[in-house]
Length: 346
Image 1: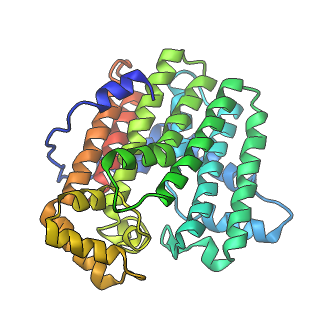
Image 2: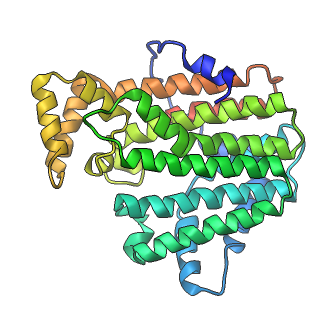
């Protein structure tokens, strides 16, 4: 992690007022500055994954056209436009980022035993675990095949390091216990599992467009803080309205994922409530009744509010990371994305 990012991140958490106004428009409007490039990218993502294997085509079509925001590849494009323009190499890098992300979703759903993904049936539920894992493997292999064609060692090393971190994050999450969970461990997981791909995406675009090392590193810090904020909000929304995430409410609890809202609750609950929480987490199956019970406890202890405040802090870190960039429409776009991330609670 870069020194600048670490210094800002280590400042004490201040009480933050969660905004109650409407979203800073929607993401599509925020990304209007690169709308034509995103349209081209969208068609390329779906076209270039076509193979002579019908099963793989069906799986890829199902998950790649299931309504994802394409935020990660959009960050590649923005990183490039800040310092130049979007050329074929930048488009290839944006596709690589989306294929890497999609591959992890396919694998995650198998590990988690997920029923849904983006409000549709998960691939593993439609075609089985084997098809989901092997399709994810194919997308990973294809991503790195395309990556080598860029002939850019710095980008290749960055992507290789990132995929290693992502696997590490998944393993850390898999072995995490509610008995010893703490915030530091949670942050390590989401930095590795989610945030590093955001950081790598925008830095890759900048590198390919010829940005200086200092500017590319500042964008990496921006992407890292943005990714942390994004994941924390996702984790908080898991205990809120299922329409916001496309997943059932309390899915993380059922999978025993100790995300920030639950970690905060475990740390702050009184003896009686902590014993009840422990008994729920030790149940063979956690049902809706127990999920509702845990959500009530989170509301009583302010755990979801705490998580959203934590997310807002990191959204502000992201904005602070690019404060030295000259004022422009593109810089405003990056600031608006940071605000949009935390507005998804509404």
